[in-house]
Image 1 (tube, rainbow, N blue to C red):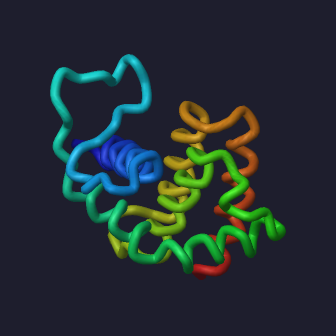
Image 2: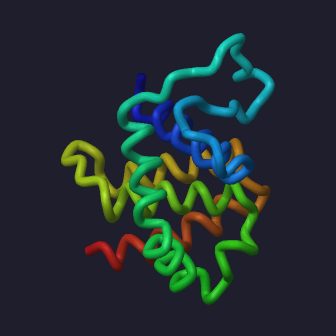
Length: 137
C-alpha cells in the first residue's frame, strides 16, 4: 500500500471515529461510493501510526491549527477539512519519517483536500500548513 493510500485510510479511520466515537478504529468507513467493499478493510501500519499520532496529540495539533487559522476554531471547520489538517500537522510534527519531505506532506494534504474537502479547502489547507511548517522549522 502506498503512503498516499495510507493517508486516505487514516482520514477514513478518523472520520469513522468522529461519527462513532466508540469505534475501535480497526476498520474503516469508506468515504465514497466507488470505494465500497464487501468487507471491512484492515488498516495499513502507516495509516494506523498516523491516526494514532492525531489521536494522541489532538489538543496540540488543534492549538497549532487555530494559531494559524486566525482563531478559526477547528470545531467550526468542515469535518473533513479539519481532519486533513490534523493528519498533515501530525505527520509534519510527530512522525519522523526521513524519506517523506515536508513538501510531500503538504502536497498530499492538498491532493486529498481537492477530492474530499470543501470547495475552498485547498487554499485554506495550504495557508495553514505553510504557516505550521514554519513552526516546525
